[in-house]
Amino acid sequence: MNARPTERAALVTLVCFAVSMIDGFDTLMLSFVAPLISHALQIDHASLGRVFGAGFIGTVIGSIAAGPAADRFGRKPTLVVALAITGLLTLACVLASSAPQLALLRFIGGLGMGGAIPPVAAITAECASPRQRSSLVILMFIGFPLGAVVGGAISAALMTRFGWQIVFAMGGSFALAMLIPVVWLIPAREVPFASRAQGHAKLGAILAAGRAAPAFALWCGVLASMIVSGFLVSFIPTILNINGVPPARAALGAVVLNVGAIVGALALSWVVRRREPFRPVAASFVGGALLTGALGLLIGVGDTLFGMLFLVGAFLVGGQLTFPAIASRLFPAAVRASGVGWTMAIGRLGSIIGPMIGGLMLAHQVALDRLFVFAGLLALLAASGVALASVWGRGAQMASDREPGAAAPLVAADGKH
Image (cartoon, rainbow, N blue to C red):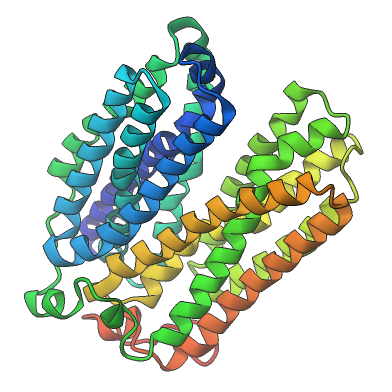
């Protein structure tokens, strides 16, 4: 086999991985500096919450809008625009002097942050062979939580010395600097004009050819899993603290979850090199559901709890990092970026709903064992959604059996491709 296409795919995946890391850092950077900003700009908790919400709403709209744009105008131009918006608006946050200003800047910047993932998922998928596609897209998206972990560590080291502005300055500069490798190294491969004309924007085109049922099943699974992970990442440190864990140690809970997610996603990327991604991911969510249900019984039980948090991160949060890969398998090239965009937008919506539901349940003092059992049931719903997407997708017009050079259906009768 000629090595050059493989090397090119690896290079493109590396560039997209770097974009994903920067997107993860820029999306979550406000969490790192929130206490400093609240003190420096005299922003109360309610106003700070609106700043968070504005950024998240921007990412949802950006995810939905960028997919059709990438399918119509091209993946590379859309990615360039998304990075430029992210970089410029993140840099502008350095000049913010009030909560409304910061909220507006985060909302517009969120359009770019949300708009980056659909084109990079499509670019990675289309530069890979059908056999490597799922694993490479998973590896690409691991950059998102890794960017949050690395960015959080760098922010913690610098922000107390240089102020909260340094974090926004870094995030914006990294995004703008990423334009250079994107422009020079990512090929301008485009969907044929006829395909773009019929599938560039409308939801009906995304769901055509039998894709409606598997797409809705997948989106239900995405929403359920992101509600769970949004709750866990947001409230695990708080839950640990109110149950006797010191604040500094409780903060490690979210870090352990993310580290587990990276390890779990790496393991799944290895598994799906040999199988289709749907059933391994559904099995991972089932394991995550059982572990999440058991987690409520271990709060306050020392180091055993952190081991369980790692496993929950690996099975549950690691499983959800495969969603761009699954969406890239589900939707053909003509609407691939749009399909990924809708999938990620629904996921980001779940990450907003999860903390809201969790906060209400904690405010009503729901017992921890019941709260985590409820979270486990949502994880089972996520597993069911992915499994149904696999079953209902067998007869649909999927990416792998309608693109040039691919003959196998998305999920063959024996589950392999």
